[in-house]
Image (cartoon, rainbow, N blue to C red; front, side):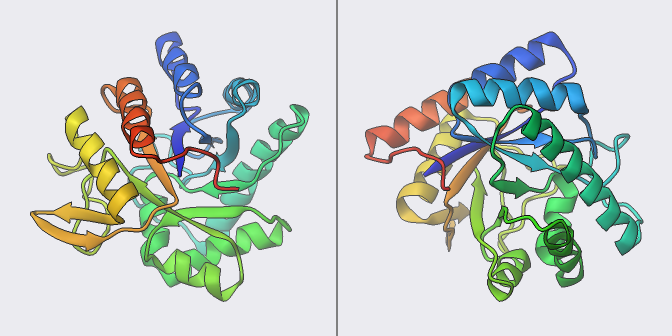
Amino acid sequence: MDLNADLGEFTTTDELDLELKLLEIVTSCNIACGGHIGNEASISKIVSAAKEQGVAIGPHPSYPDIEGFGRRSIDISKNDLKDSLSSQITEFLDVAKSHDMPVQHIKLHGQLYNDVSRSRELSEVFISAIKDNDLSLKIVGPFGSITEELCSKYELPFISEAFVDRRYNENLSLVSRSENHALINSIDKRISQAKLIALDQSLLIDGKRFNMHAQTLCIHGDTPNALESAQLIKAALESEGIKFKYYG
């Protein structure tokens, strides 16, 4: 099992310190590359630290929406979206190359992650941005999504992901962050959800059990008690015989 975190989203020294501590726990990370936040300097800081910790890295592109932090759908043409994704990916790859750090996966951020997972058209745009740049990156996305289906069609490696700190709808989409119950704030409940997913390949939604297969679990670095949650989740699953390593 892999444990990942979305990083490179810090704006203060304390937030950077938290991200660096998370890198001591996770086995892979996804680094913001300018769409919702991030620049060459912030990417470089996290890439350097990830290399030191032996943590796998990948770009974390978004809708070009800094004002909304990539957490809303925006009106953008397919060509402009593709150009933005290519630009974000290229900037990330350039920084990673300067650190002599291999890049093996890619994960979308925020609302683009959700929109692409439900739209064949947007999934095609995303995949074309990867293929047109002649990249062989593993694509991290939701289990049972249209993205997963198209990755199979194009023979692209897909890594199914589940979140330990987010609630799900019955169609396995994430509850919108605009809803009060979107986040799981209890550490104990985060651990319980992680155990269900990792050990039983299932998920409880309003008391009903749904299949949920995940090769990687995500903890958001900007949620309360993220560091403690990551530590306790990893310890709890390791005590059940789960071994953590990068899925590559």
